[in-house]
Image (cartoon, rainbow, N blue to C red; front, side, top):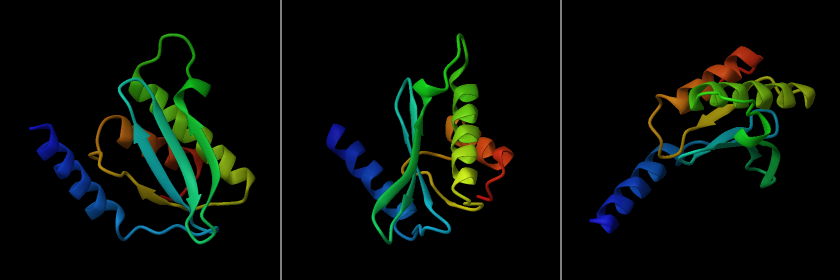
Length: 116
């Protein structure tokens, strides 16, 4: 049972992420979501480097819901990307559905001024 679910998530990740490629001008925003935290990286696939990364522990302030924290992570990543003069990016949601915390993160990026 566990192996079948793992294969299903691996297929979903390959399907979603296969055609997404980031450059220095338009990096790939890669999302990892655990039960408590959310991690985001801006990656340049040409040079194979991480431009910047943000995770939820750097943004948490008191009692915030996970969706609010995800939106704040998106805004913080957007501000860091704007400092490096990057205005657009490609969103790689990996195996996660585009709802809840992943959607809130993308909305935070958009509110921060990044075209996703």
